[in-house]
Image (cartoon, rainbow, N blue to C red; front, top):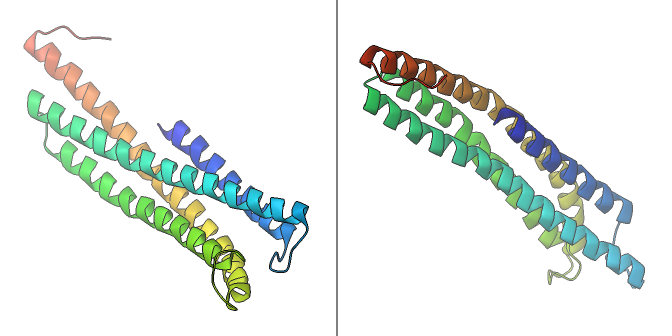
Length: 184
C-alpha cells in the first residue's frame, strides 16, 4: 500500500504543479477577449477540477485503507484471541493519519474556492481581480500543505503495514498451536 499511496500522491502533486504552472503561464485573464486565451482559461479550470478530484481520491484512499485494515485487525484479534494492544496500535495509527487526510482535502477545497472567486466569469464584481492574487498565493501555499499532508500520512501507512505483518505472524503461531492448517 505504501508504494501505491506514494505513487498516487506524487501524481497528485505533479498535477498540482502542472495546473499552477499553467495558471502562471496564462497570466491575468480579466480583460482577455482572444478566443485562444479564453480556451487556455478553460483548460486551466478543467485541469484544476481533475487535480482536485485526484487529490481527494488519494486522501480518500488513505482514509479507506485505515478504516478497512483497522476493522480487519480488530476482527482477527477477536477471532484468534490475540493481544488487544494490536487493535490499539491500529487505532493510534489511524488517528495519526486521519487529520492529515482531512487537512489535505480541505486545502484542496480552499484552492478551488479561491479559483472560483478569481474567475473573471464567476460573477464576482470588481473584487475578482484581487482574488486572482489570493488564488495565486493561496494556491501555491495550500499546494505545499497538500504535499506535506501526503508525506505526513506515509509513516502511518508504513506502520499499519508492519502491524498487519505482525498480526499475520501471530495468526500463524496461533493456528499452529491449535493444530490448524497454516498457509506459508
